[in-house]
Image 1 (cartoon, helix red, strand yellow):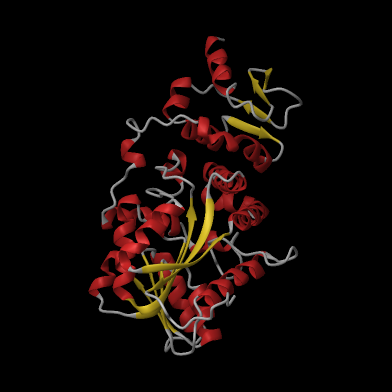
Image 2 (cartoon, helix red, strand yellow; image 1 turned 180 degrees about the vertical axis):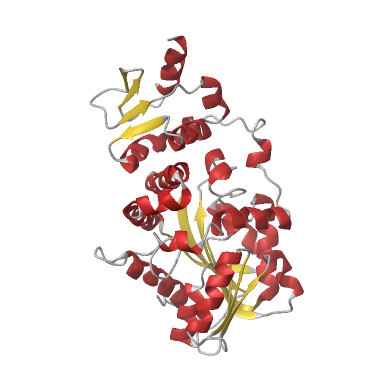
Length: 387
């Protein structure tokens, strides 16, 4: 019973929104008022584990079925995760996990661990375009597919593309952005990725769309861009810099600079934060090994070193909340199929990941920014917004 009391005492500090904890058939109210959700502990969690990493301890408990949520998982997480500032993380004990190697070999392995799970898996819950980044809901009634097309079109308009221009996509995913750019704007483009599955999927799409004369894709580390002797009118990177690591942001921008023509435009679309944090331990262990979210200010600060002028900054935080909820709905519509394909623990883990991310965006713990950057000034763009 003493262990029970220690765990309950630890949870009492998360009292901003009242909730109920059930342990050994006994209910405990955390906070004041009617409980907004209920957490059932089928197994005790050691306070030492909660102190080492609150995120890992609770995340693993849910994955294994030691913790159950009565009711809607997103609702519970949305009420609870606004208090992540109270989580404990022993950075010394988790040093290798939180501050992993940024070597090319290790980063390729980390990227592959997430994006090479299998295209068949991603096809079950992403939209038809296989776009795995924040969508843009221009209208309340937009479907996820429409919203992803909106997002791509918004990026392409910001880049002020003209027929015959060249476009590089760093971390191109399954290629939907470059395909749309080639078909609608008549550009030539190249995508680079570290994911074998994305490479194969994009290469197949290029052939199916009859765009082999316009587009190409390569498996290439961004750090090898300066060796290629390529130059582009435009560069875009969507949801990739989160895998680079804080020590490499400067090198990333240097590599962009090496291939971007004078007066060229660069659009960086990425998950951001208000301050510089090392990242969540559970996410790093199970979802995005090596992942780290840059703050907006540190990216803007580095731009001046390369004569990069910031033309436009836009937050799409609320759009990412809705995107993730769409993904989670799709995921749960195919839950039995995914459970058969990936196993029960993985399925619970991925559902938790999607709902937790949606909650952290809704609570402003993380944000999503699109930053439009010009290499140099007087690039003959309109004086007013062109999108």
